[in-house]
Length: 64
Image (cartoon, rainbow, N blue to C red):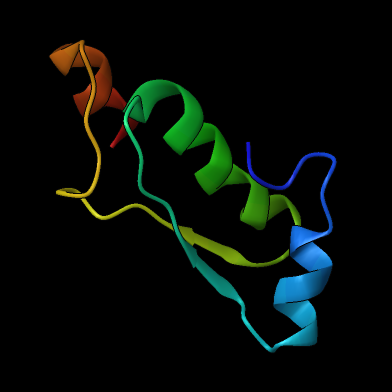
C-alpha cells in the first residue's frame, strides 16, 4: 500500500494530481490495496488491465 505511512497523498494534492494509476505484480494484494487507498482520500485509483500480473488467475480476475 503506497499511501500508508507516507506523505504521498499530500504530495499528489499539492501538485493537483487526483488520479493514481496502479500497476504491479500481485493484482489481488498490493495492486488492489493500493488502488483502493485513493478512494478513501477522495481521489481515483485506476488499474489498467494489462499492467499487472499474478500467480493465481482466478483471484486476478476477481480483483479486476
